[in-house]
Length: 102
Image (tube, rainbow, N blue to C red; front, top):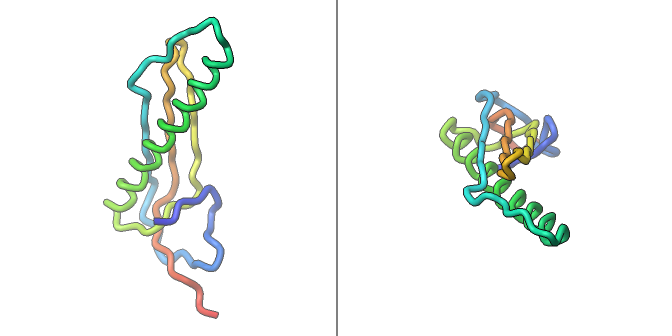
């Protein structure tokens, strides 16, 4: 599966557009406030990375269910809620691509 934020894939040609696909994830453990801001921001960064990976995995599964072999134009939205939960939403266009002939 090819995932890209661009609208095309170099050396590939889009042969079919399957539709819009998305993935969403929320961290299940609430971030704890601490007096050490460095630890707090480090924990947020780690949580964002984990949650973003989960959202991209869900996006990939949803694209595979549409029989796509790539997702182009991916947009990532990250939100830290007032209650310190990290929410990540990813959206893109599921497509089928083939390698260009030289």
